[in-house]
Length: 337
Image (cartoon, rainbow, N blue to C red; front, top):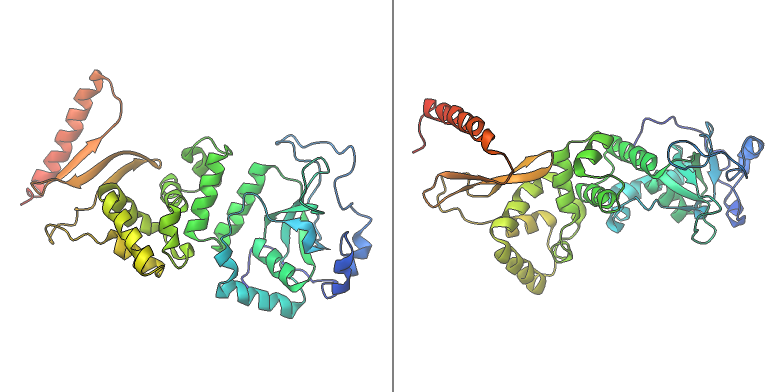
């Protein structure tokens, strides 16, 4: 099983599978802990000042919970394929051998006032795969419990997945897009700052997470996408959009689906006019993850730079000086031939 920064705990009653029929907590060997805190936030609990989560301190000792009482987070973007891969099957085997998850997950209580699905009482903060393994095996899941806001949940889930390298590039891109489209963060720059990631990476991953269903359908699994695939696929779609779509349709009709890396090669392989040139692909100029221009090779085989940004007439002199300085450096190293 992969290790994390969390301390491993004994399972304590994880083998008592008959307790799963109880629609409340699975108590097992943790019955002695019952008096310390209730299953759900107490009536009249005071809200925290950080966004409306009910006051419900972290339980230092995790308790075993019926996994059927726990639902995935609405901010999670696990692709169904992730539960078919070998690393999840190995995790499930180890959980079965140990009689439960020895590394607890974290959940937050779903308030009584919230809309619930069935009898669900908790929502996952992090640990979706461990919960899924216990759910499939019919074992209680050991979990820390804390009331957190949406932004706290996303921040903690992101840190956990990043440290464990648990999410694929595609899943991270979907997660970032959901956070932005649903207004959790105002912009890619704000998201990057809050989560401590590079804004350019957010843009590249979000591109993968929002690929059209037609492109995803010809891939064996989008989980095999890598962040650097954006650097080939995005310019290809910008410069040869119609041809890329034609190739997508052709693959779908004649071959159905292909390994993801082969799809990227087929969609992005455009023979350069000059094999000696490495600049035939359009290169996007981005600042803090936002595109402001591009570099491409013109008909004369020299790079052409275009950009779109507002500036006042008084900035023209500064632009002129910057361009002259850059051109002097080019001349000093020899003119392109």
